[in-house]
Amino acid sequence: MRFFTRFSAIGLGAAAIGVLMLSQTVAPVAGSAVYDVVSEPTLRPGTPIPAPAGEVVLRVRGMIGAASGADEIAFDMPTLERLGLVRFTTTTSWTEGPVTFEGVLLSSLLEAVGADQSATTLVLTALNDYAASMPVSDARTWPVMLAVKENGQYMSPREHGPMWVVYPQHAFPELGRRHFLSRWVWQLAQITVE
Image (cartoon, rainbow, N blue to C red):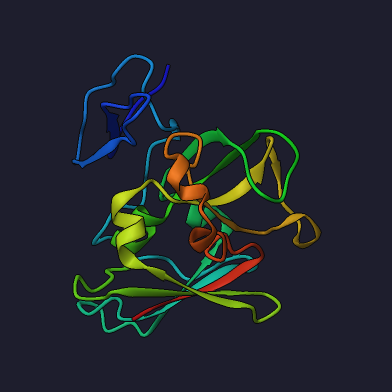
């Protein structure tokens, strides 16, 4: 069964691109779901994020955690997955055919780290120091995923991992346009909120 917990595509027609509604809870709409919920979050906004017990897979810094005074929050995989997992199948410019991705919504991560509401940009940095800028509005407009699994398997750095920024272009074809492609950062290691 497909569910929407934050996003609902409405009015997708031959000539229309979908309109997105942001909401805390939106009732499921048959045949129009953007993603499936794999697991509900157990780490909610405002809850202290535990220090990593294992290998750090993502660091978030910048305009975050004003209430806690944190200047950087590090995640290991189990803690990251506590933000709740979603799944969708989409095409990419780097793989053959549709791929099923599983991961955390970028919007959920930003809420959990207390990203400042006035922030406008996310700088996405990969393990090889490649960096790309993404408007924060992307995470607030579309269910952009920090994918940790590709076709059911955790991704190694040789296979775009441990994390890949993935847009739901299966539901929003406009996300396949050239100016979005640089934001599909794989081997993601750090997000700086500016």
